[in-house]
Image: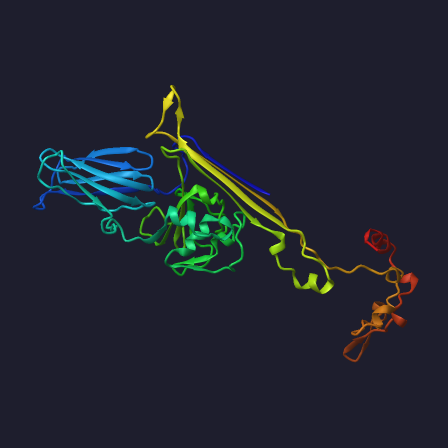
Amino acid sequence: MKYQLAMLALAASVAMFSQEFRGTIGGAVTDATGSVIPDAKITVRETNTGTKVETASDSSGHYAVAFLLPGDYDVTVRLAGFKEFVRKGIHLGAGEHPAIDIPLEVGDAAMSVEVTAAVPLINSENASIGQTITTREVEDLPSNGGTPMMMASLSMGVIATGQPSTVQPFASGGAAAWSIAGSPSQTNELLVDGAPNTTWDGRLAYSPPQDAVAEVRVKAFDTDAGYGHTGGGTANMILKSGTNRLTGTIYEKNQPNNLIANNFFNNKTGLAVPVTHYNQFSTTVGGPVYVPKVYDGRNRVFWFFAFENDQVSSPAPAFVTVPTAAERQGDFSALLKIKSPTVLYDPYSAVLNGTTVVRTAYPNNQLPSNRLNPIAQKYLQFFPQ
């Protein structure tokens, strides 16, 4: 049985060794002639939480908004004498630094130019190569055993090195059984929100519930010096946070006994399928910190709760032999009557015949009573009949 519990109430600063997983949106503000525009007012807003960050373009017309959590953003630019510019639908993944240049048009500030679903963003800040498995993919695509880190195998440059058997959240080795950019298995850096999530031998240390993960960011090649603790690539699980809406999920995964095939040895001996139960269930819920007439944390403070439980019962029948009543008395004559008979030899009768050691067989495979060890006979009382 396994329990997983995670709760985020407030964003707090914790002194620990970790890598920066937040992203940055930046670029240049220009006019129709390509000249830079300083002092333009820029607002970057996360659409799910409503959180806003405001800045202004500098004297060279450039702007940068750093430390943004992965999510969906809108960028709005305002300046007197120019039409308002709105760029919608920007998805910012973990550690991404897209360059979004803003071309302003001369006109009434009450008018606006809105750009949606533009060309894919280009990361011109570094030479890192990777891919993000998005929230929708994490939620909708089937994952092996409900382990979010298994989604990394969908990324480019990742090749599975383990067997495709079910990887439960507690199977820490299977969730790291892949090669990233040609590196050996279990030599990659596994992270959760930028914090190390790897055991001493390169396995996954902790697997959060699937519905608690927003995305899995895989980098086959990383030029960031902050990610230098790996012989291969990096795989970063980004946890969800609450939003302005109270939302949640609930699910159960069940492996029923009547859909399990019997094994060869059970079939041979006429034994039925062992009664097996595998239930994995989880729930998540999150929203803003809101206390009526006391505090309204919408657009500012959020909470998120996730719980997962595994209940597993998997009997494993074993076939063993025990001494017969005759064998308990030193009579092993029955072993001479089987298809491949076994002959017992007296270990104290060994003599050297040339270069070969030969021994004398016990008559009819029966041990003399004086050769029976009294201590061994006491141990036999604990063996079933």
